[in-house]
Length: 135
Image (tube, rainbow, N blue to C red; front, top):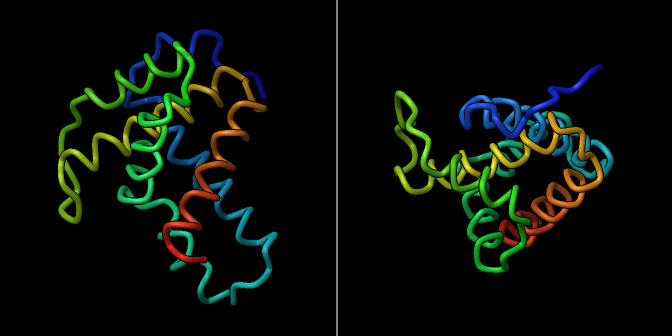
């Protein structure tokens, strides 16, 4: 599959749209590889990884640790400031914006074809969420 050549110029919400899917895929694969979760619990467990709260928690860590390079940080800022039509009822605006920024960075890396960096950030995110959730 060919990737989008100029992912950096894409709209933040489009990057977040892709990043949401990419993150979900990595989480599902991780849970299946662990093999310790019963099939009926897979979805419930996956939701704990891909929730806006979990993503915002990781995003805060990225900001505190200055974990993103200059281009990733730019995509993050744009994602955080993007105005979407609505905010989900189960989260506040700040959490939603941080989660959108998180997803935008993942979408950017995926569409830019930087699979090594994408894997590095997603793996770190999964570890961070597992520690937070007590998995």
